[in-house]
Image (cartoon, rainbow, N blue to C red):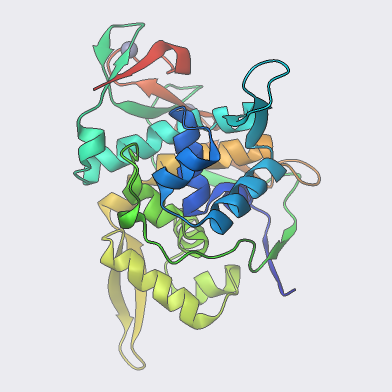
Length: 306
Ligand SMILES: [Zn+2]
Ligand SMILES: [Zn+2]
């Protein structure tokens, strides 16, 4: 099988485990308590083969576990694990971005309340040291002890031709996020853009996939208004791809994914990258806070209500 060698990255490792639209959808369904195979098939609309492929995959990376209904029971149900429950902050940032830029009826109906202050909130990403909001270009990236290279599979999962728009589930709070992040290369390109990359050749050097794959993903990101295409050379014509405001605001989602990858998708000698928050010069630990009281949002202190 053909391999792809790229710079070690916790975002890519996280995406290689869960960054597939069906994996992301399954995790969301299980979060809502949908935990039998048939219910999941009805919710996602995918074939039996694709669903069972993804469930096996998610079990192999310890994001889903199969447990009996009750002690000694025969009926087995799918549940989240410690690892997938820890995607909570990432899910909050997905919700925040989706709310900011899309009208998603399922999401618009839901109100999020922080029990600690009793108020409806917007999740915000703040630095644990200085408590300031974390902005994408306010970070210095330094190589960490695990700054090596990762050997990655070109293809890891069985493909499905169904689009996210066609998914019947009513519980998809961030389907636009899933539509973008659920494509592995699109998400990899976006992650690179937060490191300041803008040109085709730069992306290609870091992500040596076929050039037609890279072109189609760049085009898709321009269509989604996440990248803005600007000409920087006339002969021959060359373009660069810069993040729009919508693209920049996507950053906290990727930072929470990076932190999750650092914690749960370890390989080798430690973190591939050290992030320094320029504002306080400390190692960056972002945490997701309540816009109203500033407290860190913990799963048991947040309620969702329709
Ligand atoms: Zn800071
Ligand atoms: Zn609060």
